[in-house]
Image (cartoon, rainbow, N blue to C red):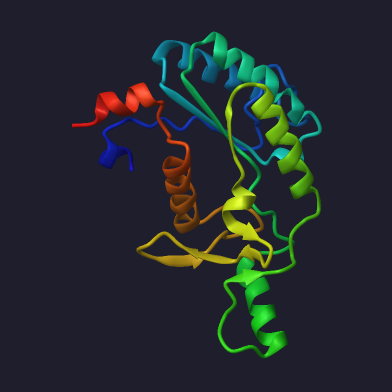
Amino acid sequence: MAGERGFRVAELVASACPPIPDLSIANRSHCLMLNDDVVRAIREQRPASVVLAARWFQYDDYDAVSRTLALLRELAVARVIVVGPVPQWSDSPARLLFRAYNGRRIAGVPRRLPDGLRAPVRATDARLRAIVEAGGARYVSALDAFCNGDGCEAWSTDGTASDVVAWDSSHLTSVASTRLVRLIDETIGLLPDAARTAREP
């Protein structure tokens, strides 16, 4: 998508390090240094947009993301997007789909499963949305993207290919990731209006 739209993308991530400066994580002492490096890169590169994502429900202090939002405002980032928790399955969607198909003797593989999610995810999604919107950033509910009243998508398509939504309990496959990113761009825009206009032919 970056090539299609004519903008650059930098991915600055580390395993189990939420995007919250000054937050100490047990057994992850390197997170403080890495987050400092990310802040330094943002200050130097001055990106038009910053997208924040994490396995939010895993951290007791995810409310502290409000500090990140305040810092990004100080750094004059025009658009800050926070992506809420993706569906957190009790097992891999592939296994859950097999059990649903094999156990119910249904015709065909179901697109959605009505159960199999971990309970805290919905509460985290609602709480995080309130924090982000109070901080003046844009919030995207990944749960809303993949789930509805009939359940959550266990497999998905990006328009060209189909696959299960996650290869384990939560890490999205390329197909699901592409679909989510395109949805974000279509609904709120990955770039602020001024930057988008500047890149249009």
